[in-house]
Image 1: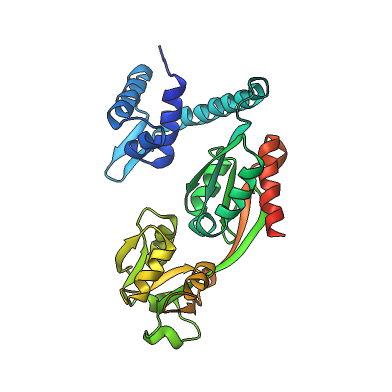
Image 2: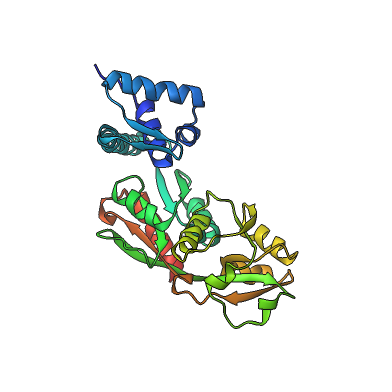
Length: 297
């Protein structure tokens, strides 16, 4: 007889979405040993494997995909129940799950989010960084309420709204040979050592994919956690960096760096919001979408 509790379902959702039992356990606030034991108990209870385990992580089996769909539906219903009852309990209004690419997460969301939360004290927001392609799939599958993606990505049948515009530029030390260039192509940038975000970041994975498509490696000498740190290492001559233009212009005011526009079409970033159905979201989530859209006006 199958016996899955809400902790099991929440854990399994996180494991599949993270592609790793270790990272799924972290997101579910469980110790790795406890998480592994729960997953094994779920498989034993079902009598079938839920995950395919490999060197690169885990992926769901057909049984796992079926369980994931039901887990997401059940957990969403629990969240709606909590929202409906919170009015009587005087507690939190609700929780939003947002997925964002690196550009929006670092440059535009913090200010917009802080203003929204100041007005909605009962709402909590869970934000996760993903690549745009991953975000579209997860929003379509019901894994998040809202996604913020690059305008170039195919969002299929999802509803979309404009959010912000930015572009990626190359930052170089002020005395670098490229500093006087009007623009530069990504292929030429790859001839140099690079300073970038750490490998799990959505932007690094995005750039690695672009490099792979033209058959060139990325020579990442240093991997950091923030665009500002990237710019500081670039200033010291460690390598070149690729960052949003808004970041680069802010850093340029205090650092000895130069900005060189990227010629590649994908460097332009018309960011957009994507969601399944705005009318189906709870009122506080609709307010959040309206807040983001108004901030762009």
